[in-house]
Length: 328
Image (tube, rainbow, N blue to C red; front, side):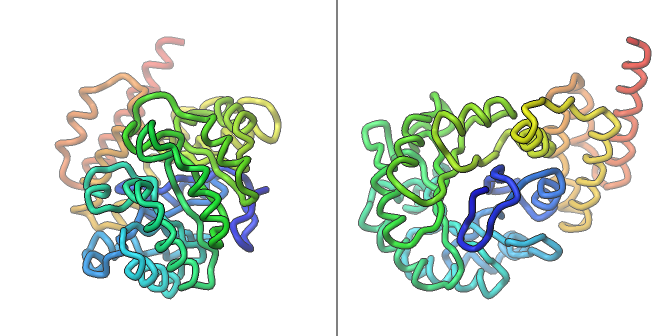
């Protein structure tokens, strides 16, 4: 199994950090359902952005199993080093540096994947962060800034030389966003250019694709991002397939309902009712995206309190169960 510094993962399937998604309730749920490691939402390196309510919630790791992994983002070496120290003092046991986010609001601040245009600055940031903390530091990158500048292998070698202990590579350039085909060849090139663990990321949507990508790239593990939205059991499905070569049956309706209800309850408790209700809407939409019933999702989005949301979910699953019984 891959290791990140002194931490050997129980399996090589990792929840990728996603802003607005991988909050503490979702991280805990994914760990329970088989993720070998979960990484929190990216935390701004800028100290001025650290005191917002959103940032404070992102810093809350209460009750999470170890190791606690936190991702930091920014474009100033000193600020990134200070952010790393701050997060370690707050309980982080692994610091992950974000140089993979393609979002415009991040790239416009010369952070995330925008950094890959400036290898000198990349070196300064990696050096500053690694030297500032005693915990392992990992790095998330893309294959480059654009199809003309696929410099991931070069940055990977630099990162290893500077003390980065593991790499995650999203197989697209920043310019490609989430479109175009994932460049598994480039991930393979990164893997062959370094001796530290490499995790492949990008369009891994199920167990068979996970095995295919790991074999093709030689990666030590995989990151699951968008495919886990509304499907947190994807981790146990992939791990089961890795261990047995057999595909798990999809969870029955009653288990999906149980997982969703638990997720909603943890959102209300973590965020409070007002914010929890609003954050619940996108998660419910993801859980039900592969089911018929756009009308239900529209109605659900109008509900304003936990009781109404929970009652609506219970009725939806009762109706779905009745339909199955009638069809049978």
